[in-house]
Image 1 (cartoon, rainbow, N blue to C red):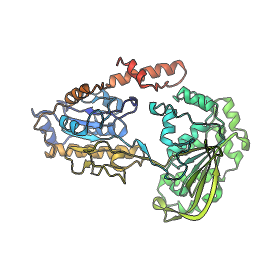
Image 2: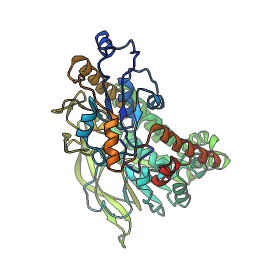
Image 3: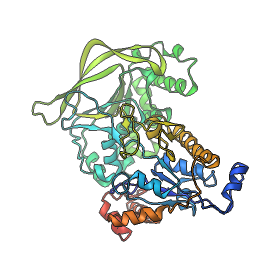
Image 4: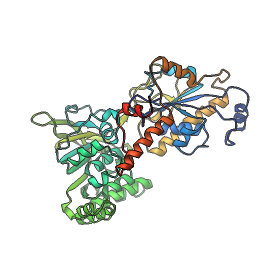
Length: 480
């Protein structure tokens, strides 16, 4: 169920009554049992991100092949604009459903834990991405982009995406669904340089090759990678898994290319951006903007400007690596350096938060304790996605993880672990609870009306969509 103000991407539960015609892929015993006159099992999924939809999709046994088809299925109902833990409790959901799956993700960010991180001009990546992606809760961010250098702490895909937004030519951004207010702020941006800084080395970066290649080919920019950082890596990565090997080879190639060669590659990728962008990209070493990767540096303190109104830099501890591969640890060497910047963005990861006092939660790891998605000590309660395993992995990881949890639900239905002898009212009970508390849920057809309004506004502006960032306006569109 989604929190108020997060109608577009917020989580939402599904009511999943089984159909009369059951898919042949189900075990024969389970098909016979589900075909009996017994009341159909009802399952509630809390979360409408990838983990929630993949879980629901697998419970529906892959009859449906997309999130939209899942939400539209007569076997699944979507209810948004509801905050579980506030508008309705998990025990109340358990009284309404035979099984409840928590797939609400990681909605908080990890903190740096260093002096100066609360200065103006220091933001979490989550808040900054939310700002340019149109999340209502981040629309008051108003980042000051009047500096020339931005420091992003982190070497993941989110860090690369932020750098891309900060350095992209405006004519490219105008063709995306970025919000008008963010586009206006970026049009006035003075940012010319973005450094992405990590504690470990090139063999431990967390971004993927597609995102790196897109950044390398960004029109009007040049990549600044120090060849010394990649000395000896070709032999070290020779036997590495193919994705890591290809990623490292691309970084090495980019680091060793001369500036003119890098700009020629960028110019080749700039054709779709128009003559102006292509001209800028072809300007050789004089490219107006640049970005780069800095390794083996761990932030110690964000240093304030003289007036205290923004950062002037970050003091970094230089590190050395102990161990190898993904398990390598960064250990301070005792040496420090200061990197100048006027804006700091922390992209060191997300963390899940406890949802309800009735749900066990491991605060140290930021996950719900579980075994194959079964919440420890709470029969009938499950979890999937980042709240199950932590905020790691790519979309295929989330998909497989969610399928694993869904399989646990199906096995428990078949094995009699879940008592379905008693009828459960499902959302009928939840709806009466919400009504008594003045909460009006949003259906998927309501969501589609908001989606259609955004697409129509975007079409008029020559964009894929124009995002609506005011929750009250969303509710007005659907007549709430």
